[in-house]
Length: 474
Image (cartoon, rainbow, N blue to C red; front, side, top):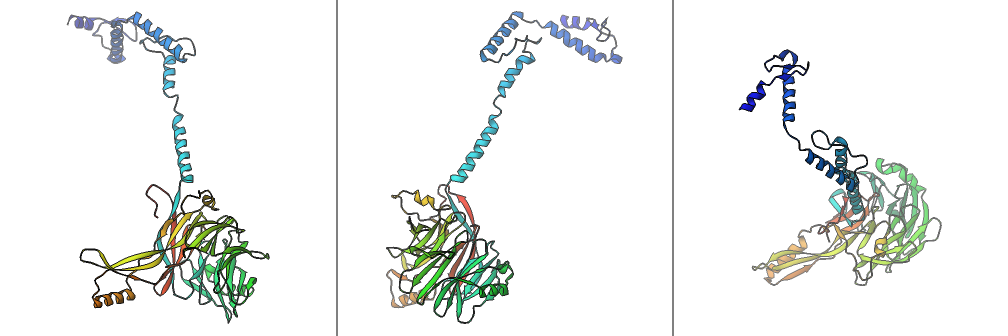
């Protein structure tokens, strides 16, 4: 208590005049409260003793640490009055703490580069969205043959030997009928849509004709312009009686036409026709598909086990490599090969009391699968000989079949006869998909699928996805 009394009775020195004034002097008008506070803080500081020896030892120790770390680039600065490091001595430690700030953007850049490389090199597969029906036609003896415009702006469909023009919504905008005694089939549009190739049948003979496609014919349904173009068509190839032509498809550059030539009762061959040159044979096969870069083709050939096989071959017919079982291939701009695989499906119609199948139905149906071959098929040539053939990813499954009249009649007969043993009904082979075709940009798939007594033209959007573990659909 004595010290406090002495402290409060000690005269104060004025911060303005420098004169010692009694404690009770009024400083209100001069900002005295602030002056009293400053004087009080100064006296408190002077009352605290400073260990000069400890301060000197601390200074010496810090200087040695700076010399060892190489941060002391100049003369040693003295400690400030508070016993801490002065500003120049605190700066090296501060800068050392943030010396590696540049690592953050480097890490972000490395992560972005790794993600880009992973997206570029990781295995991928195609995933199809819901199939949308474009149009529906009555079923004919021949499979539905169609072609697609360059921007999916329209379609050409052959029905009863005539050309039907459809807009992008599937509505018929016109029909081009051939002259009497003639018929059209197997339309093929070039990638840019400026050239149309057709098979024209007349008096038992078949020809391949080409025309310059009128601009906007598919979008506007310009029947008159297309009829005029067909009237002046150029015949580029012709076969004699008993021979047939089919499966026309343009190369990506629109300069070479692939087609199938065959005779009744004999195996067909695939040919390439470029300009006025003689056609070049690629050997046995049918339903050819060009690679996106135009250097190779995939050809359907008969297999040893009775199942159709797909072979990858060069444009000269050399270096043929077996891909997988399948038929009617289509090679899209993104490097994916689509194919139809015929599988056997089984449906259980009734069960025994113990839950085992009693009466079942088996039927062969088609589903669409894809293989990622790249732009030219080099992926297949890098595969080792011991590796099994790829099966492909399931893109569009076989449509679900419902019991028909034949199954119901078979069930009634078994019930009437009192058969209680397991039985299986084998239906006639059925390939539900008749033809598949990629859109010019490879982002959509077109398919002709049988549905009872009609055939539907379907369109499904495609999305490329990275193959994660357990994500592939075999």
